[in-house]
Amino acid sequence: MHQLTDGRYLLRVGSQSLPFPAGDIEAMKRSRLQRATEMQFLPDATLADLDLDLVQELAHRSGMHLFPEELLVHYRLAEKSDGRLRLTLAAVLLFAKDPTRWHPRCGIEFIRWEGTERRTGAELNVVKRIRMEAPLVRLVEEAYRTIQPFIPERQRLVDLFFEERWAYPTFAWQEAIINAVAHRDYRLQGLGIEVHLFDNRMEVWSPGELVEPVTLEKLRHGERVHASRNPRIVRVLTAFGYMRELGEGIPRMFEVMEQEGLRPPEFRLEGGRFVVTLWSTPIYRPETMRWLRRFEQQGLTRNQLRLLAYAREHGGRFTSRAYQKLVGVDIYTASRDIKDLMRRGIVRLTRPRGRIYEIIEEPEKVVEKPPEFAAIEPILREKGFVKNEDIRKALGISRIQAFRLLQRLTEQGFLRKAGKGRGAHYVPDERMLQRQTEMHRSQ
Image (cartoon, rainbow, N blue to C red):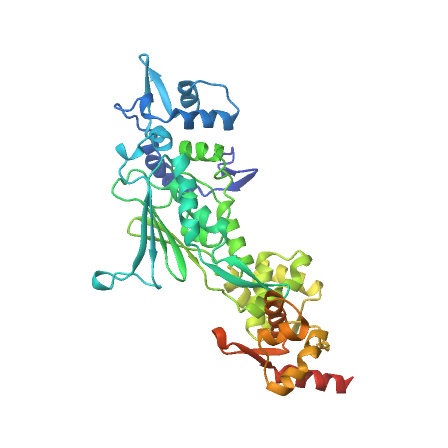
């Protein structure tokens, strides 16, 4: 933070100098008191308590040829006094063979719940509970490795084929965990980091309030803001490649969640803890996400894509006010973004008085019957439906190829799935066939 000669304050974030309200200076001073925790010296901690291989790995990653004592002093994790090396809490949390000796709750607890709510007593629905304890430079990696097998998969349509994707984008849930480890309040020794996985969401609970100038409002808007309660711990974790000190994590979490068609991350403070919630439920219908792909090469902003998806879900129309409320921008930004969409020929103004806009849809084209569909039409006329085995026999293809063909014909609208499991079969989608016939007549 810097004060200019005219009295204004600027906060340096990466390569930018951002205005900083003078009224927040006192709040920042108060937050510095919280940052003193990692700098506390532990009189009973010695170099023998540390895993020196981990310290040596830091030297290797940093490109420094220093002895462990010199490296710890360089990173301000220790200091020499009266010929003795004094270690800080940050040093033992990062590198101690047994960090719980100095902090009983410095690990991560993972709980997998059955269903979408917590139940207790006779209805306790805990499926799995795992406690992870390790030096922080290993704890993050151990958490990733332990939790990954519990992340469910979901199907996403890609180029008319269903592709298996993780229910939560890897970057999003791993970023939530590394942030919890790096920025939690280590003064609170009775609380630990908790990761709760439900059927529809993941929650990462981190002890401590937010550090100024970070606020819930800024986080909820996906702003690029950076501050650390534990700058020495953050510096080492950055050297190990787990994070960057540029405030990029939260905005990218929003980006990857939206790319997968999921609800944006949610943030809240509860009981002295900061909670990040990631939802696995799509925010838009699969058809809308497929429709959005037509704009991938047009360089639209994330907010503009959200607007188009919103409009698609609401009859193809929207207002400037709805856009402002949707993404949290002011009237001038909304006007600029909407005008850009108009210049690109994507939307148009339909009611000047009410300022109602609509998406310009391309004229519907005739979808010709694929040759594979023509080959199975005799079976459909005879039986009224087809199954995977019918496709295999008629076309001489494998079970997987037949499965993919049925998916493609279903997505194109020629077939409609009926039944489940072994009773699953496919019937003609009369709506598509009728629409196709009518459009041929009109031409």
